[in-house]
Image (tube, rainbow, N blue to C red; front, side, top):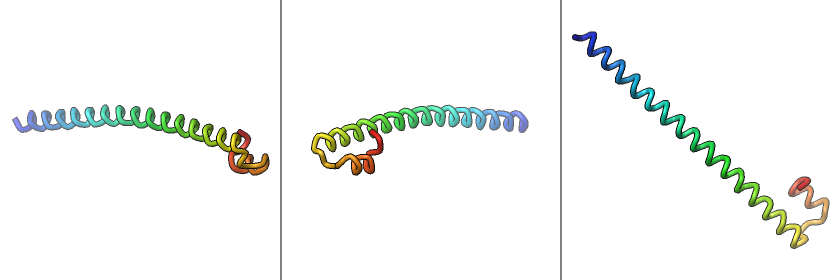
Length: 71
């Protein structure tokens, strides 16, 4: 009987660990999706600021390259 209880506890722990691993996998996928979206938004914001800077002529060409690179 003691051996069966040990086996049951080990199986329960294994089940819990499998659940944890599955949850972590889901969280990693969600996190990756959030990072991809944040990068997209960051690129869009950068494009917006570049367009504003060009429209307002806030920088001469050299200053513009210093601030925004070759965009």
